[in-house]
Image (cartoon, rainbow, N blue to C red; front, side, top):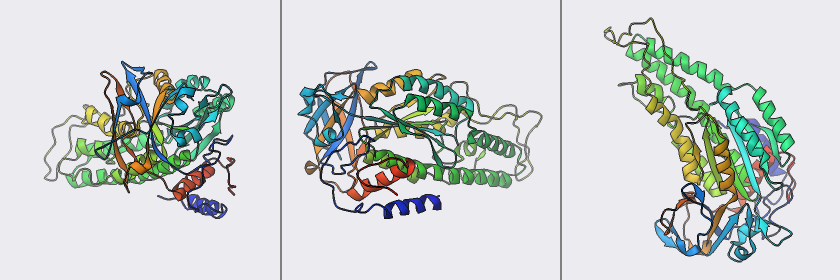
Length: 445
């Protein structure tokens, strides 16, 4: 659901920003102190490629060992550079794409570094406080590792996106923000209670029709909630696209269903018209926005190994079908299939990471190692580029990147699309709305 206040602010910002609908901007200084992308012209398809072997980074791949296909057709790499600890070293500068160089900043020793922009997004509609706090503890350790050029923002979502900490390099501000987050309530508790009630109602329904009605009502509630979440998530990704450098989205959640209510339907819905609602369109729009914007999703399923959201009830012998026949089932044994439940809630998180070249973390109670891996992946990787003149496509380009070196695994986004100057300008408006005090090469508000 689009929010009138948000659209009004967007319209106001667009009206206050002359020249936003101009043609491609000429290349100028690409990075300002605030981390805003000032050049919207794109000359190459840039891909961040993470290479690992036995879980460790591979630092000596060559351009000749990389194979790229676009829409199934092989394309030659025009640019190939290694980023190590966030820096493009002198010998690789001549092989880096112009857009990568524009988004980097010079160091005193002649190398250039790529600023890292980390947006940490806590999905409080799907999180329980205890699960969230485990991730917060690991995030504190992550913050201590940040370089002076890194910027981090912390956001929460509880029916609307809220900026808890604007993009900053101040570790003190980030630690204060995390303390506030720990004290903040979570919508996840309310939704968990509603889930338990729906579970109980379905278990005790006396007829198939009443059970169907309860399950359908629950599915529609979830669809309304998660449609708004995914639409807002896409806008937040657009805002992150307005920042320069390596753009990383850390999505912390207990997961959600692409078919709202699917888990209860699978448990109780025999013959009840399962999976009648889908979020596939809204979900695919988030992935498309991320891949167009050069944003990498790292997703964390925070529920941990000991999570058990199922409800078990005792003292009820069964329920009746439409003909009044007793279902011989014990309510002391949950009908929820744990495999299906895990699959339903974790698969969207895994897909977000896989499609955008990131990592998916699940089935653990501590997350320090996960954040260490995210930091390393965001610091050491390869930038592979193809001149746009070599690619003819109006829509998103399906990508496949492989290596001829045995034993090496590559991780990279699965599609790419060019953004117009108008679309890039909207990204910066979204960024300005999310972080009102940001400044760039045009004034907002």
